Image (tube, rainbow, N blue to C red; front, side, top):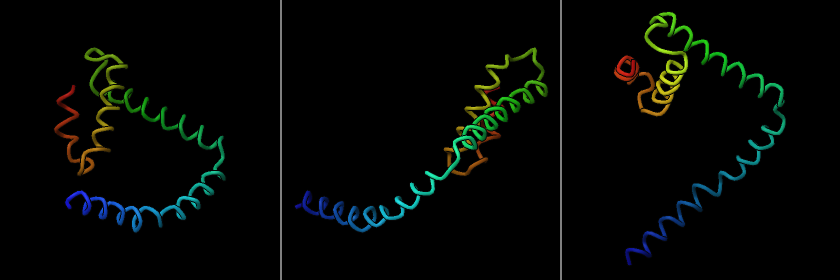
Length: 101
């Protein structure tokens, strides 16, 4: 009986929540097909340069004697990942960033 109820609830969730979203997905795929590859590559490179320059700025502020550039880049990227995955956005930053250094 429990299995039957579980399967029924899952089937209803798929039918009423997932199936209607397929029509929206088709419109999204059509919009993605119109994006310029040059702009996507340029934005990727600009984002990589931004993250790299942020690590250089961190090194200038802290002094290059303490940490190497690669270590600073890894710390900054992990700090960015925590800020994007932990609920609360920038709330964990004061507790995470300085502790790693």
